[in-house]
Amino acid sequence: MNRRRLEILQWAGLFAGGLVWATQHVLGFGITQAECSVGGQRWGISNDTWEGALMGAAALCVVGAWAASLMVLRATRATSYEDEPPLSRIRFFAIAAVTANALFLGMVLLDGFASIFDVTCNQA
Amino acid sequence: MTDYVAGGRRIANVPHTTEAEGAAAVAAAIARRNGLPAAVWGMLILIGSESMLFGCMVASYFYLRFHNAQWPPAGVPKPDLLVPLVMLAVLVSTSVPMQLASRAVRRGRVGATRFFVLAALFVQAGYFAYEIHDYTDRLHQFDATTGAYGSIYFTLLGADHAHVLLGMLFSLWLLWKLARGLTTYRANATQAIAWYWHAVNVITIVVIGTLLSARA
Image (cartoon, rainbow over all chains, first blue to last red):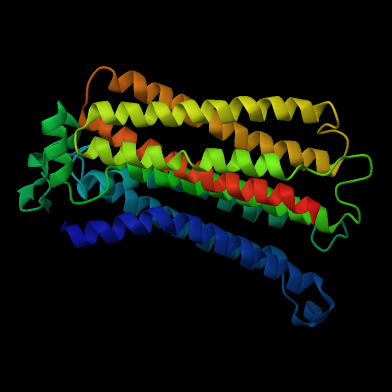
């Protein structure tokens, strides 16, 4: 694997998980608002269906980011994060991404399941 | 075996920059370096996450403030203006010796590095001692359970003081390490800790500015 590809995979692995979770959270909020607001009621949006689909797509993306960081980790296995930059940075961020994406996957699933199993359109 | 090549070398042939020992070898290893070490990248990630933490607390402060007609509530004194600003200036000034320490260590000047870190630590310890005295003094006037203002005031200020304390522990650890000579590992740590102090100083400016906004 050449350096350019390693760099792309490393940055994708590091940032994709966080961005996907943030996107899921904002879009999920919008879906709930669309179902529960007066203006969106005629659209017939099913909160649970859309939230479930959104959660599935987001979880797949995070797993993809996780796979990317694992590939970088494997490609740099002969080195250490204490080596010369940029190799040290690529390996170091791959380790960080593997850890962070595990957390982001949990957050995506919790966000999605909470939106589905919580009572929708209930006045707080 | 991977085919990745860094700077014309096979991946396994890239030297470990933390292996250098002694002032001259460390200075040469750092001069050859063409990017930030992993220690500094790790510190930048920490600074990013801590900035988000303080960003959320500052946002909570203003959310609470805009939902209360009287801020601070009746019976709670407004924060002082002069002393916090002077103490803030004292703390922020320690960015200068920390940056000088970061520069000195890159040139392999371990004696100068120790001096600058120690000088900064001396000032930071004075700042911390006064702030803890002031914090406990404030707790005698009102506390975190007296209302939203007390809750966010002590949370925000306490979190900031905790970060100053952590920085002092970092500096103490660094001085202990540097007392046994210079390695690239310790040089990387000096640079990372200098970054930490710059971040703590910026965060303290934001925290004190937020708390002083109650006077407006």
